[in-house]
Length: 420
Ligand SMILES: Cc1cc2nc3c(=O)[nH]c(=O)nc-3n(C[C@H](O)[C@H](O)[C@H](O)COP(=O)(O)OP(=O)(O)OC[C@H]3O[C@@H](n4cnc5c(N)ncnc54)[C@H](O)[C@@H]3O)c2cc1C
Image (cartoon, rainbow, N blue to C red; front, side, top):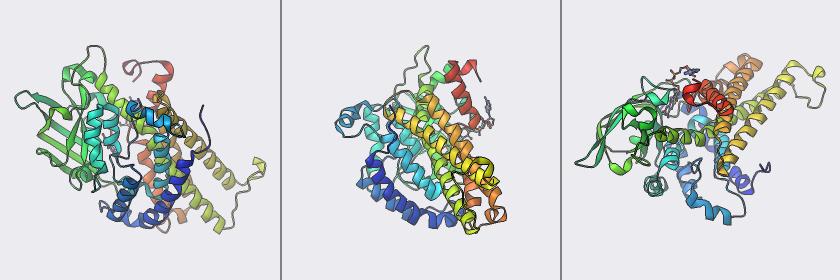
């Protein structure tokens, strides 16, 4: 049963993170928004030290299927497993501080989540070790290509085994890779590249490959100029005869006849990360609501909770409705991460929480601008920035439409090809 009391270790963690968010993120929000692609090294170095001290180097939860190796340890502890829940709270708080800066928190991020979801125990140990090293390192995951976004099974990047050298040779182009540059060029990080080892096998041929910083034949060819989350780099990566060792293919190279194993690995990664993306939207929404109420209070508008609805002003009703949206979206995140922590399937809940998180952050930031009018529109406050930062929550790791399809398929019991 879901426990609604926040576990004590998380409460403790949140005190520290709130200080980081208030003192190391929020005061620099505007600067890093206006200086796109400048790297917030002070924040990165501080967070790297802090996370090493608490042993949270990879910034990725164990996979949705659970990390069986960790089970005995978890059971010995006073609290049930809370890895995902702890990350959800952490990402919410850091995104309350600044979601763009949060996206350059050192650690494996999506890349490590893909390793966790698809790698063998040996691969996890080997590839995630760099996130515990002395210097900060970053991870990314590259699925999207110029001709393929939502339909991830259409990827064309290829991986061919050179049997003489026992290396995979990768060719193709990946676009819109969050933290692609910082992972490959500014740190000793890695990018998990999804490629096909057999184009005729469709989804079953998809496999994730670890491409490490410094691999010859891999280049960052473009950085996007974006509307929001401007502290985070969004890179294009070209692979030209890029060679990686055989063991950099995560999981097994065997292609089972009837399964879509490779594709399932991609989906397991998303089950792990979609609630966390939703949590970032919750953080931005909470920041917006708090500032909105503060600005309203400065104008003498207080929210009179407890009055019958017909006695409230329209602004009061709007604020209360926004608070309801925020609370309900957060509860969906908590349910999705609780299921993951307890090693239960969470595909439905992960997509539901992502849909709701993307929706509410877009609505709340837009409504706050509407209520504050010109004050919200100027750069005197961060409301306009959060409005720009919000929309991405509904785009990456499956758009709102695609996650709605996943929800419908789960409820109706349809496979992908039956409901598109
Ligand atoms: C800032 C940023 C960071 C990103 N980071 C990453 C990353 O780290 N790694 C990565 O691999 N990708 C990343 N992406 C890519 C992102 O995941 C894709 O943009 C997204 O999946 C949509 O794909 P697309 O852009 O090709 O749009 P399309 O798939 O062409 O979709 C266009 C529109 O059509 C809708 N649509 C598509 N198919 C359907 C359908 N069947 N039913 C209903 N509607 C549909 C979509 O919802 C969307 O609104 C990032 C994108 C951005 C903008």
